[in-house]
Image (cartoon, rainbow, N blue to C red; front, top):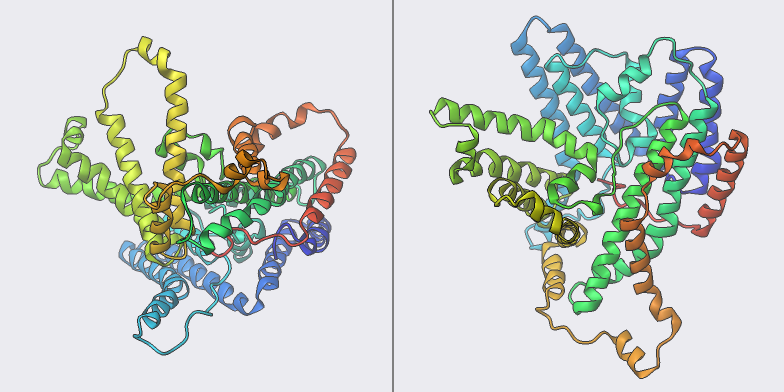
Length: 508
């Protein structure tokens, strides 16, 4: 079930809210049990056959967690249980997400006869798997505490984050679930803010992301037939679609959680305004960046540092500025981390190349920060505005290039698109400009470039949702009036597109 659907907004969500408010009067356990139950119902409304898989994953991980707690005086056993938990989770992910695409590829090469292409990827499997792995790692390290079955199930399945994130950390959510003295049930202020945040995200999804998606689909459905201008128009359309789709989902998730007085971490912060790739990953899918940094990059970097110390090699800034030191302490962990991040997004060479490309970008960015000459403050002041604009545009173009691998059905399709984007397929005058010159154009032909220009203006010049919400409380409008206004707007927005598209991150 999609957040922008009528069934969710007008049936599921009211039932979830009313049930939470009523049962909240019976205490914390009743309220949390209701949220856990309704979240599992939400998952089952997409495909009920995968509910046993979700519950099995939860019970397996919770069992590992209990065994770890009971083995607090046996470090070796705790490490073995951690390995068991990680292997079990990764095996589930590999089985559903990678095994069948690999088998399908082998079949396409004539190396198999069984048909694998129709195997369905369970909804949100990457998110609930990563969430539980992180909890087990922290529990093994003594950085997390044992939770009750109800609290743990809700932590994993809470429906606002289940299908596409954010990737929750237990320290952000668990304290909210077990806080003493907290009132369980709806509060007017949280519901008001949550509804406003949700409607802003809904507007992005239905009024901005979905309408431009059809122009992106034309490019990726026909990746070998485009030319310079049309390919760039399609590529920019997809970048814009992805931006507002993910931004809209992130806003809706935050808004939905806030309605239940639960605060989600920020997961999207105007990433196309970034002046470097490092900054981009601090603004784009923030919880994923935090996760891979905490559980992949930092342990790998620490392991490399210890190996260097053991072999008598330095780890100082001077050693880092040496080519070998930079490659081993910065380049290698970045390339490994981002390659794994690329593979996390999907099976296929195109996702590996997506990760490798961003790993290369980040390595170059760190090298520039470390080795580039430093300019005087006066020179920086003279060129600051121009250099910032150039940096933002350069970062944006680099991101668009990488996104061609993210969206394409294969690496060959992505390379074909990039070949046209960089002029290797020729750059003739666009058909629309020829018609403009000849005076035979029509107004609908200007719609696509006008959409691109206007949406890029919104991205770069307009405040984001969190900036809008920061000023939200300055408007002293009664809460009931706000509720009516936003409910009406939700209705209008919803029926502006009666068949909303799935979120791009819907089945990662």
